[in-house]
Image (cartoon, rainbow, N blue to C red; front, side, top):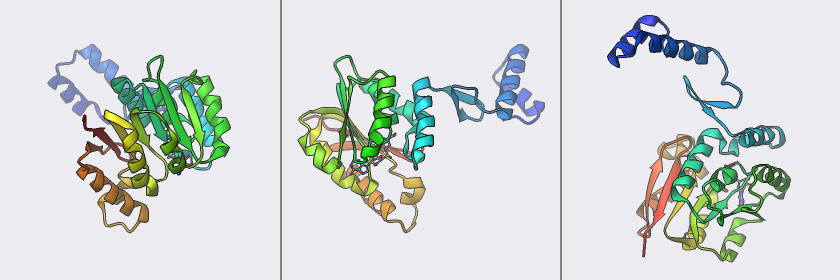
Length: 246
Ligand SMILES: C[S@@+](CC[C@H](N)C(=O)[O-])C[C@H]1O[C@@H](n2cnc3c(N)ncnc32)[C@H](O)[C@@H]1O
């Protein structure tokens, strides 16, 4: 932000801000640079804090306290992106592959209509108690079903046509999960795949087995005639895929 007043004043003059507005904005930007985000907020940009729902904030804290890899959780920024996408699509049926502690499940479930439902799959049964605790706190116990087990075994048995699918389990399994899940996606439905840039390693010569699988996966999906797709280079890379109408 602005370390001295002169460049700040010049920027304000360009957008014709009044003297009073200049004072307020300068004060807020200096305060936010010096302090941690306010309670209940997460830092989005150096001078902008994003409010986070209390239940998600509590889940984030519990995930940090009770799991070994809390960084696997979507978190506030991507969580809000998932909520926005779900609100835009208004899916009746959602499939999530890779539930972890339920952060992204709760975010995606926000866009469900009254009769909507989200099925999520998680191989690690030790996570189910934490998952259910927060799904109940979020009020989604009637709208979210957790299937415990290997996604490759569970997906073929789901008798639903999904409007929205999130791939977020083992990255080496993305090609398999994509092939199993795509027939379950209704024509015109959307599939999201998280972490497709793998910390930038997919776009470098980095020797990494996961990056190599994701590099090939990204190319295959981009060339798949059944869908149209796009990679959003946000956070760790989110691929948006739309299945063609018949
Ligand atoms: C990145 S985390 C999911 C994060 C979660 N979607 C969120 O944003 O909070 C991936 C999860 O997939 C689970 N997983 C890995 N391989 C799986 C498989 N074959 N079937 C089902 N779950 C799997 C892992 O145990 C882990 O909890």
